[in-house]
Every structure is written in C-alpha cells, then in structure tokens.
Amino acid sequence: LALQFRGRMGLKPEQLPGFAALATRFATLADPSTLKDQLLLAITERACMESRTTPRSREQFDEMIESGWRSCGRAIDEVMTLLDRVLAERHALLLVLEQPAPPAWRAAMEDVRAQASRLVPPDVLTSVPAEARRHLPRYLRGARMRLERLRGGGLDRDARGAEQVDRAWQRVTRAEGVGPLPPAAREELDAYRWMVEEFRIATFAQELRTPAPVSEKRLDEQWQRVIAAAR
Image (cartoon, rainbow, N blue to C red):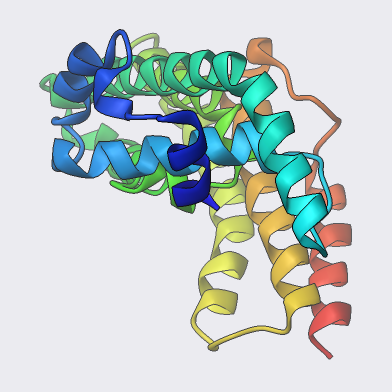
C-alpha cells in the first residue's frame, strides 16, 4: 500500500520541508537512512488507513488511495510534527538522565531509562501503534517530571509509586516471555501495556492528566481480560 501511495502521490519523504532537520534529530535515535521508509509508512497509515476498514476489492482499494490523496497534506504535517515533538521530549529527558545524581536515585533513573527505550525504539513510527504514538510526548514529559521531583526530596514517594508500577509492568514482561499469544489476547495485552503508561502518569505526574481514569483496580480488571482472551 505504501508503495502504491508513494507512486500515486509522487511522495518522497526526503523532499518534504523540514525533513533534513528532522533527520538530524532522528540520528540521535537511529540510522537516519531508516527515517524515509518509516515516514512513508506512517504517512500512508495516517492518510489512507486510520479508522477505515480493510479494502476488499480493487474499487475499495482505489477509493482508499484517493481518500488518502485528499488527506495527504494533513497526514504529512501531523506525522512529522508529532515525531519532532517526540524527539524533543526524548532529548530533554536524556539531558536529565545524563546529569550527576546521588546513588539513591539510581533505581528510579534506570527505570526511566528503560522506559524511554521502550517508548521510543529506533522504529518508533512503525512499531508503536498510531494511537499510542500520539501520547508519547506526554509519557516522556511525565518521566522527566518524575526525575525532577527527586531533586525536591520526593525519593520515598517515588519508591512507593515505582513499586506499584513495577508490579503492573512485570505482568507484561511475563506475558511477552511465554511466546506468541492468540490475536485477541495480544490485543488485550497491548491495551494493558499502554494502560501501564497511563498509570505512570497518574502516579508520577498527575498534572499531565490521563485521558481516562486509571488505577491498580482498573489494571487488574484489564489483566483479567488478557487472561480470559488467552484461554
């Protein structure tokens, strides 16, 4: 689909305004030569496929391409703007992580470093679902706020929150380690995985707010859905 869309549109990501600056920032994450293909796939997804059913005929496929053509300008702007914000928030977080810190902060800083790596992998535009990508700047900002609060003497509170978050996250780790899951269970696990990120916001950076209420009880309820779907 991406190749068809690129052919129909003559879309060349490397010729888009702002691409060079974006590629320079992206180089701190991954080989910038991979950015073109990631952008093409993400723009195609946003323009042609988001909130639409899979085409079942050539006519439906052509209509999807035509609709994508009409949405292409907005899709390009949204995808590139979001990636720029993600990279900026990631950079700001890494700067905090690079600052000297007391040994007592080590556990929190290692947890945040691992979180950042999961949130923004080298293939962020293709491996992170589109809906979750929209929230990445907020998740990264929340992680930075967590670290900044340590400087205000919030170590004990951070440790208590980290224990709650870790219990929730260990479920994801264990589930990922058992091998391929049925599609329905995979879908429920993905929902749970991103609920954990919202739980981090609720725990460490409440002022950033969450789109929906989240708590340990709600996480437990979603985890039961994972278990039920895996049976």
